[in-house]
Image 1 (cartoon, rainbow, N blue to C red):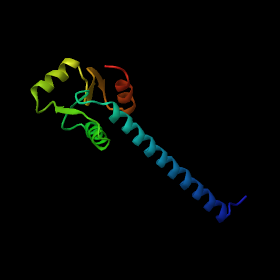
Image 2 (image 1 turned 30 degrees about the horizontal axis):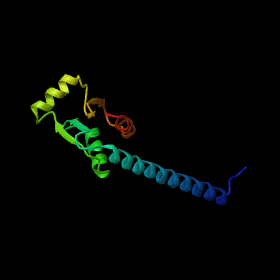
Image 3 (image 1 turned 180 degrees about the vertical axis):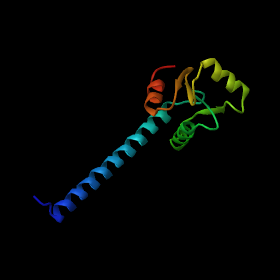
Image 4 (image 1 turned 45 degrees about the horizontal axis):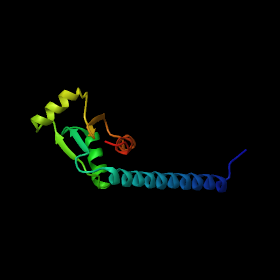
Length: 120
């Protein structure tokens, strides 16, 4: 049975609407998550141990800055204390986010929120 142009156009339109709604929802959820993290993070709660060549570090840095989350950062290539802390944690890679004294490998806004939601 041949598909009419009208049916094809309706299908394409439906896919575009669903895709747009999905993107809007994801953006809305990310903004909400950012507000929650920012409201819980106090100065000194989050320290990001990163490296110059780390792409995920750049993503984390941008997300934290865009959501106005209080954090500090050090680079293992530039700061001997930072490198020593990284080595002491046995970090297999960067970023390592130290949230209220507890290390997290990698960056996940959801894990960050969970860590901040617990009393320090």
